[in-house]
Length: 148
Image (cartoon, rainbow, N blue to C red; front, side):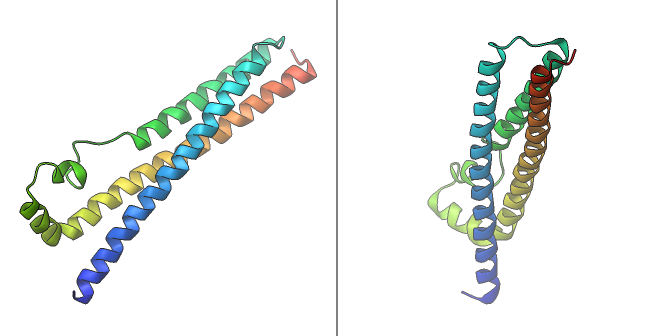
């Protein structure tokens, strides 16, 4: 194995590891968002809320739902992809070997684009989660303070 092949193999492994890390972070954030949504709904339905709290809380829940949608989009399987499993499922063993030997750089590029797309969705979802959480805190403060 020459130096170029070793570098390509290392880059391929690094990109795949980054995708796995992003998917793990996405799963944790999705669980957190789900717990916050369930908790906020449980608490809010038993409290006498004023109009300001309804508006802030409703916006907070809507923003958290948008974050959950982004997270789900990030982990949604893409079966029409040109690289990886969907492609390999259509090839024979010999064709897979030839494709991997010939197209490792193309696979790295495709996986890198996938990783960037997943990371972008995750980053936006984190921003939305922070915004939604701030709106829920505002709703709680408005309820506790009795602001009208």
